[in-house]
Amino acid sequence: MSKIIISCAITGSIHTPSMSPHLPITAAQIAAAAIGAAQAGATILHLHARDPAHGRPSASPDHWAGFLPDIKAGCDAVVNMTTGGSAVMSLDQRLQAPRRFAPEMCSLNMGTMNFALYPMAARITHWLHDWEQPFLESSDDLVFKNTPRDIATVLSDMGARGARFEFECYDVSHLYMLKHFVDRGAVTGPLYLQFVFGVLGGMAPDPDMLVLLKRTADRLFGQDYHFSVLAAGRAQIQMATMAATMGGHVRVGLEDNLYISKGVLATSNAQQVTLIREIVERLGRVVATPSEARTMLALKGAAQVAF
Image 1 (cartoon, helix red, strand yellow):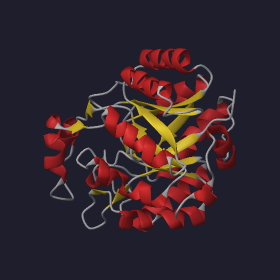
Image 2 (cartoon, helix red, strand yellow):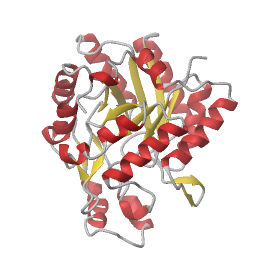
Image 3 (cartoon, helix red, strand yellow):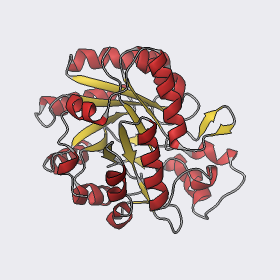
Image 4 (cartoon, helix red, strand yellow):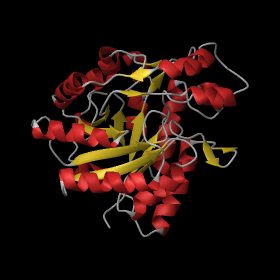
């Protein structure tokens, strides 16, 4: 099998700060967590920003500037900036920082979808910030908007800056949307697909669904793609392990899952990276270095970013 890429999602807009004291919030915490994950074996670092004053997801380039240079100076991992940000941000807000910093990679959600986080609220007894509970509870009416026009804008704006994409597919229909853009000539290979499981409104972490996605991607894209798997919540390691046995890549990190085992909070992103690295290496896979991943995904290189 080919080399395996381990991606680590350091902090994000899905989980709220009070759910774990180990979720990095400040610029210094995000930088330290990212560098630690890279040292543990993460090839790609998937990043969001937060406002340290209240922990909200942030689109501000100033907040991104607080940690991007430190991450670049502290490790060689590929930086993958979100263009998803948060479902309550406009597209222009979500693109502020990627436009300014021109990373090697960006994430790109391949469709509009319900993004229902409200079941989490019933499991939380302590709220650190006053925005958290109403945000989660109101997500029964939350839609993440990414229309074909939005997707085309991201592809055009970030493609012009030399970025390549982690195509986040929450549903099999998202593969067909990606094929539409390939057919339009707006996307060229090699493609890097991220199959996303565990978000209510998208796919449940069902092994049969992963098999279907892989078969569909084979039919649509032939050999000109790589796939990775992330599962939000308790199925994180199981689904990642299945992906590794199928020749795919894996994503872990505290954005997707706060735990290292049942009922035990992960103390760091690096702890999750270490766990999945041990598993995939026991399966006979060899973890790709950042340099190898840059070649596999045809990335422009860290010297070409604007941070």
